[in-house]
Length: 312
Image (cartoon, rainbow, N blue to C red; front, top):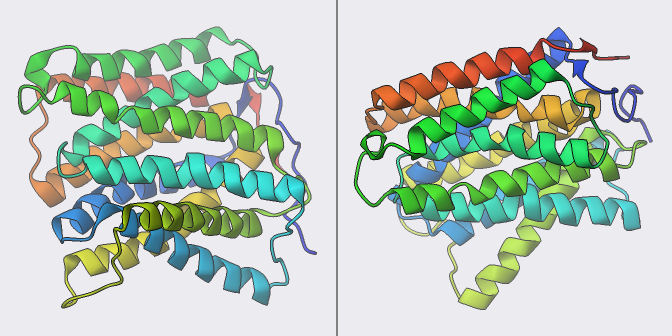
């Protein structure tokens, strides 16, 4: 079976990303932010959030499975691969997307994306604990700048558009922990001989399986009923967007490791702010703009320190 070009399992402590990987990070950041806006469009358009997660996972997974079959790169079904599919399907798609879709009508899209900026802190701590990365003072300082940015939003009450929203925003941070654990486990458990395309297909189909079980338990069904509207379109767009997003998740972690991958969340934060302003008329406060400056200073320190990534 054809595989991706060989790259070291972990690129080494404090590896600097190559220009190609940095480009992937920016594409993935925009894709992550777009996903949060699509959640809002879907829920505002009347699509129940559980079926929404199911259809975007099933549609995207089926498309990638067809592509993998055409390329003769079908995902294997042995224990290491099934463990990867089930773990990533739960932590990287089902749980965080269900929660984010549930919160979409309650919290502005621009604020939900800010929670993503905690992911680098969590991933760095996990990677250090598991010895997947080594302490680097400038990189650690960059991570702390990103953390300071999110605290600048959550701590001052004036930064939130409505009193009492802090609890919903805090709940929106749980997907960040899920993403962090997933990134570290993907780097640790990924079968190295398997390319990113079949892994992404297997993960998305596993996520569809989780969502199907939850829908059956709750009795919440939806299958593109009614006149075609913005919710239907958002669901179809989410299928395509997820294909891009989750392929890049596997590919960036393969190339550069979980810590470099984590910096995509700063890019997603700024992109999400822009989408929130453009699509929904969100009005960020001065605190939020200050947070963005801190996050991108942190992004610079994290990505520009250490040795160059080893690419094939």
